[in-house]
Image 1 (cartoon, rainbow, N blue to C red):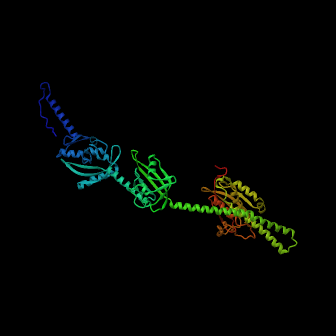
Image 2: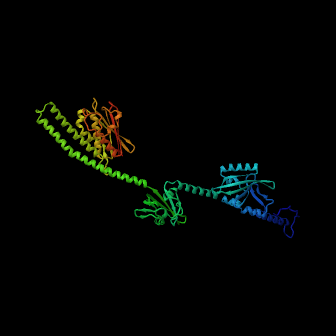
Image 3: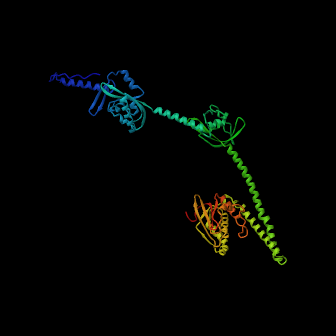
Length: 547
């Protein structure tokens, strides 16, 4: 670099009309400007830094042209810092990381391009370099746009003409991080395929298998990669074969197959039932890369469904037989019983005097037994018909109105026993009116029948229980031993003999069959001598008349 010498003394005055001092100063000024321009453009071995005290010139002693070219063109970014961490020099690569130019970076404090957390980390690296002469680590740079650039830095202390500087070499880690992310994503994808419970197969546009899960290998009977799809998976749907041609044809029209029921024929002759789903794979240029095929083995489910179908058919036949029996019991059996009862009553009336006391007692027992048997058959018919109403016929039923009609039926029994019935507002329920009537009739009848010494007191109220309504019928009767609170709902289960309390033991069984039909349940809470609370749940809306 050309130096600036001392200014020689000149005599004052004008020579030929031109001031020689002025001309000399102009020449020296031009030379200084050219020197500064050369330094700025890298044509001289020096660095100019604009500081608060004006431009400062730092010479790079011992530097040569090949070294400068190497630094300027190397892939890594490099900067030279003074002891205050001011950037004395930046090569274009470092400036590019910051989305800036070398001229705009030079003269800035290095910490300007560090997030707060990394500023502390960088200070630690500088301290380590001061002790060891060098240090290295990873940190983040913050570009002018705010973008974070992960870099690996290597710091070295350099003494340049008595000036202590820090040389910082930076390697951009963004590409490395992207590659690591790709590798992790690939590992994750492979792990998902290996652990997927369903068979997942990826084919290319020619139908060749390029990826497959472990479940797909198991379903295919061995390794399936690089085999043609049709060779491994021979699939047939109700409308024809499901092969690679059909799958790729659907993919080219951007059509997916969802849950198609197919049958797979294995090489050993076995057959499996599968659900097939397909989805096309498109590239960035909208070219078809292939297709993902998911095969779910439903063989066991199919067998279970077939078994359930057979059981349902057997149950339907059994129910049909039961209905036929109930019809016979209602008509064929009850008619002879009525005749026995009628003939017995005629015998009592017309031949009362011809019978002794024992004969009259036997006839009376015969008539009573005939009436009880007829009532038993009637209740048995009601039990078999308790769940026969079709579901689609269900409409909203006002429980208040059904209870009012039920109490009207028991009006005489309520009056004779001096009973008091307290009815709270009830909701509308999604049940048949006939079924709700049977529930109320059986429960209120029991409350009036199984009474203690005091007049019966019955309370009916409703509470919300999730999506169901909980209806309670509470009485002050003789109660039930807690050990028998479940048995009372069994068919023909009676806790009391036929002497004092009449009945067939079917009423509560009918109640249980009805509530179970609607997805509800029925139970009782009771203690002997302290009354009973029968509770059942049924679906329904809000309280009648409420929104």
